[in-house]
Image 1 (cartoon, one colour):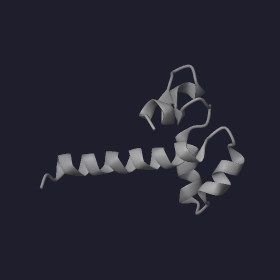
Image 2 (cartoon, helix red, strand yellow):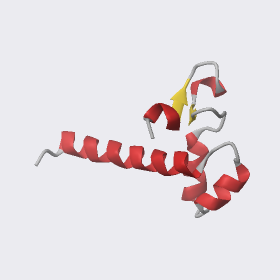
Image 3 (cartoon, one colour):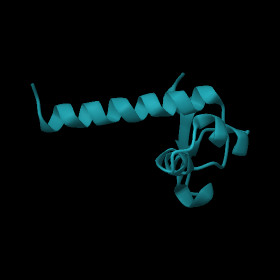
Image 4 (cartoon, one colour):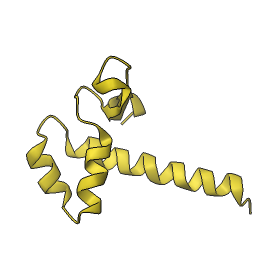
Length: 76
């Protein structure tokens, strides 16, 4: 899944928040759900315009971003 199929950002959509592509659902809501101990399934029930594939791809993107940042600050 391409990044453009997963997340997007537009100053005219939800005040420029990063959202799941094709929706008005900010990715920060998913993070809030997970921090509160809620499951992905519960998030998806509340936000049916977001697909499980988008959620999983977003989590993969976030993980890769952290790994890249760690590599930049602590090269092997």
